[in-house]
Length: 151
Image (tube, rainbow, N blue to C red):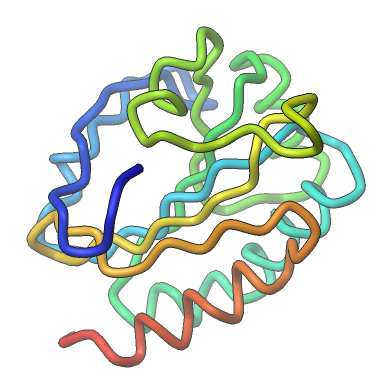
């Protein structure tokens, strides 16, 4: 399992706009990378909307928010439009990045897990939060961690 203090694995995935997201291109900024089970499910919608509602706080803390699930680009486009999400959602359709980040499955292995990573400006993991049920806790806890990092 990935640990705090390790370099965040670099990856590339397609965004909702069809461009390619590359983690290393965000060096110099903090990144909140959150893995979630599925677009438009109750917990995932609550989590995404909580990140949306506090997005400016994250920007003020020098962080970019990025969501990842195995849903398609088209699913992410609909989810983003429906809920006016101001941050990127990435399509990890084959689960390669979820595997790279060692995100465990939840509910006896039936559901993809919900894990959030805070990555600092140098690309080092500073915090890992794993909770399927605490969707909004991912937002509040990562903000606390970001407040403790150098701006």
